[in-house]
Length: 372
Image (cartoon, rainbow, N blue to C red; front, side, top):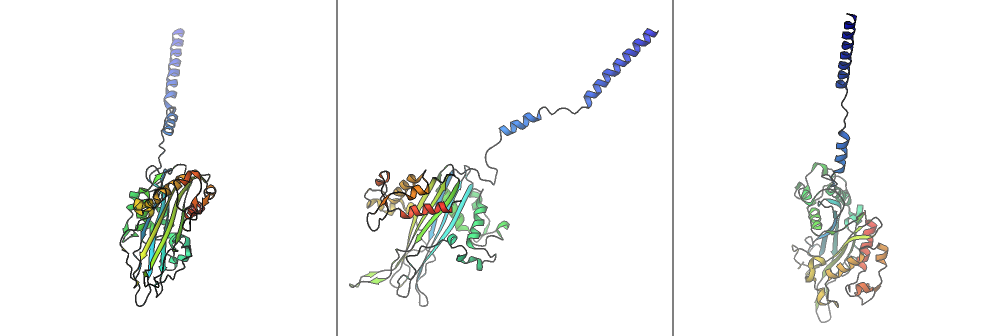
């Protein structure tokens, strides 16, 4: 009987032990064995494209000029003639998705005043400053309802554009050209439609670049070739004309300051007047730059090497790639005649560039100074 009781007791103890072990295993938290593997897999497959609204690495850059003479005025009984040339400039870099990485916008508003005798009254020797270069001297802050100058307002427009595609930029709500967006209500009160158009054109003109660390814009605007009304001894008239030459360089630099992309253009804009001081140029017609004119500019027919302006400037741009500004400024040049004071004098350019290049070198150097 005792043996039977002992055997039953032993079986009961064993049963309790087995039950206890099973219960303990069921109440433990399961180990998250799969979680680390899932996290590692997500990291390995992470997309490198920029998130929506953010720009990635710059892979192209473009320059655009939009020029108008529409605000030029005739001489009248109570006022003299005044030519006005407005050149809107946009330089921008774009990522592989077409988003703006950086953008620089400026506006050269150049006026040539004539006196009562239709002689040029403006200082022909002075270089003209753009609106950005004028800074607070432009005077918009005094009349703006938000107290902001032009350069401050355009900086807000540029900042808004970064990370957006051209389609997104063009979709900006506007009221008669003025931004109609809550986030711009306190920062931008000027018309921006032309600036949006210029950035779109810069995208259309874009060329491939790589290793971009900064973007700069350089400008040189002159009215030196404007002329007075005159009559010679034989009674032959020379009619008055305002001429505005706007040299523009957009340059991308790498971290070491070497040029990785450059676009140079020249808007040679003329406003013609008759002997009474009336504008005879078509004020509504588009004004094309030398690059845009292409073969129509006509240099190829008179060039000793048979190359037009756009072809020669492309050769100069190609020569600049990989060089620092100091190396570019050190380009040996020669005097050919009064109109060609700085023609390249290096073997690799003598057969491809016969134009004078001082303004182009100077604006590239200025672009480096202004680079950001």
